[in-house]
Every structure is written in C-alpha cells, then in structure tokens.
Image (tube, rainbow, N blue to C red; front, side, top):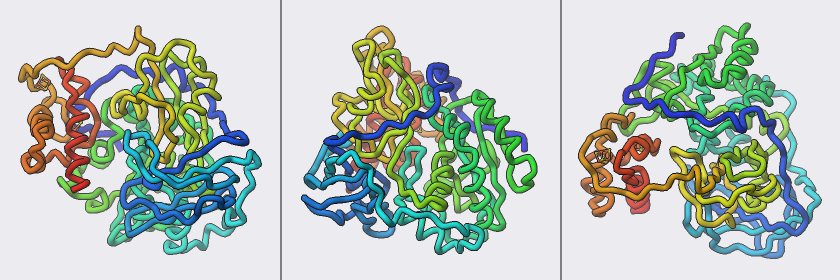
Length: 438
Ligand code: SF4
Ligand code: SF4
C-alpha cells in the first residue's frame, strides 16, 4: 500500500540523534523510596483504592480497581507498605487522590502475576478480561483503556488493526527502541490480535526516519500476508490517530466519531508490545519507558522506570543534569507541558522528560495576534485556532463548542507556527478540560 497523506501537515526539525541509539535501561526504586500512584492516570473515572494505610503490598498487586465502564486498574510496581492515601500533585498540575507506597527494596512479586501458556485457544472474552485486569491503557499518551478500545460494537466489522509506530514528536525515541528491542512481543501480539479479529488486516506504520525499525518489521512480517509494514515520510502530526488513519487507509473519521465507526482500531506500538507481556507473562502495567532528552541532561537516553517513581528520582538515577535546566517539559516539545516541580510521579501516560539549558530553551513572550491565519493553515483538523483560543480565554464555552474546539487533537501545530508565539494549544486544552469537567 502506498502511503497517502493528510491535510495541513507540518515539516518540523527532528532531534532524535541523541537518544535513538540508546538501549532501554531499567531503573528500579530503592529501599525507602516513596512511590505515588494517582487514582486517575487514564481517560475515564478514577480507580477505587483496594488498600489502606499500613497494608503490605507486593509487586504487581492490584491496589485500585476500575470504576464504571471507562476506567483502569492500578497495580503496585514494588513490594512495600502503604504509607498514605491523599491528594498529591500529578504531572498535569492537578492534585489527585493517590496511594503512596514505601518500597522495601525486595521487589517481591504477587502470586497473581502469572501468564498463560496456551494463547492459541484464548477466547476474545478471556483476552479482554486479562487486558482489563492488567490496567492497560493507550501508551501513546492518550490513556484510553485498551480493553474498551478492543471491544468495538461489532468486532467482525473491524477491517484494520493499525499499529502506530510513527513517533512524530521531534525528540521521542522510546517507541523506536521498543520496536528494535521487543520484536518478539510485537509479533506475538499482532498474531494474537489478528486471531481475535478474523476479518481484519494488520498495518504497521513507521516513519522512515526510523529506517532500522522499518526494515526489521518488513523482514519480520514478510511471510505474513495479513500484515503490511508501511514506511511513512516524516511529517507532523502523523502519529495522531485520525491523521494516521487518513494517511494509511485514506479514510476520515467523522467529526465526533471513533476509528471503529469506519472499521479501524489504532494501537500505539508500545501498547501492542505490552499486550504480549501481559498475556504470556501475566505482567500488569507497572513500568514505563521514558525518553530523557535535551542539552541539560548528563545522560540523555531511554529508561524503563517503575510507575509511581518521582521524576526527580528518575532524573537523578539517570545521571542528573550537566547544565542548569532553564526549561523542563513533560510529554514532548509539541504536545507537552512545562514543569515547575520534579516531585511528581511517573504515570502510565508519560513518555518523556525534556530539559533545556537557557541557550536552547528560547522562551519568547506572547505577542498580540496579527491575524495572519498561519494557525488555520496548519491545523490538521481544519479548525480556527485563533478564534477558539479567544473563546477559551473569554470562558465562552458554548462558542468554543460551536467552533468544534472539542475536536482539537492537541498536536500543538498552531502554537508552533504562530509568529506571535500565542499559547494557542494551551488555552484550547484549558477550554476542553473545563467542558469535560462540566
Ligand atoms: S498564527 Fe498567531 S498571529 Fe497568526 S492568526 Fe493565528 S494566532 Fe494570530
Ligand atoms: S487547534 Fe488543536 S488540532 Fe488544531 S493545530 Fe492547534 S492543537 Fe492542533
């Protein structure tokens, strides 16, 4: 299949060279470390705690249970003792009810952590139950519970399982490393998913700035005529679900609709790798691979951290800073947000910490809008960012909804291209959050 493309794409400079060759290094908590588990680290309702202060917990033990239809379980990443349950600062700047566990340094595993050997006879219901129990959510950053995504209204109408290996954020390399270091997990998961969706074809989409991954998977799936590997020309925001569908399948998801409405399920490549680890080894989601990049880090690279560890502990154990960080961000240069405090926990939807010295940070003040319409020209969703931004700032949420502000995919293209350096994506995100809370 020849890749098509999507409208209003950006060509941005990529900065993957510092970390793309760095193998994933595990970093584990030490005895006495405090790990913090916010009860909401996914789309949907917060999880309900199953433990109380003073309880001893084991690695992989379920400590909070999904509440309602859209929610996700949470598991301890260490063995230790529950010290408290109270609101704590989370990566997005909100205080969220959290379980705090002190690690005993032993990493003693809970007996429930065991995989199944016969994956061939696994039914769809049993598969979904295991995925739900493991607390898997979209590891591309969206955090949507995977068992819900894999439960479309009519599974037999799913025509494509689209694996997202685009990784279009300019500094991210963790998905690339997962593709290079976990091909066995990805192949097993793909084969299992295609058994469970018998009328679907698999597509693995990877940007060609990760040619080593493209070649590896072309070879790996060469003899499987249900799976196609597509190399995509690098462009932004190619990894956004709707844009990737447009590129690979040449169809648009209707406004307000879901990919499954047009017969597509999109899964990030790290989510796909996690599926096999969950099914065959019984491992719930307790770890997260993070890219640390930017000139302020002493050892930029890819690190596999235990969920609940603080950003501060991860940064220190990865070698700390060599230059004074002037700007620190979580989530990526395009879609991420600035941090003022590293005493926040690593959660399931995290993927990156960026730290720049004053020389690179280049912070420019916002200027008045000059009505150049560049933000409109480069919005991949065809929105009017300058208008929606004004409505969000004025708290005109009805107007915001009328101009389809909720359809914003939070790609950051508008803020990036704006010559007046308006904080467009940030205010649109604020408007969306207010509407969701209402
Ligand atoms: S790109 Fe910036 S300056 Fe131009 S119209 Fe949009 S908000 Fe205004
Ligand atoms: S309005 Fe939203 S979708 Fe459009 S460019 Fe800005 S962040 Fe991206």
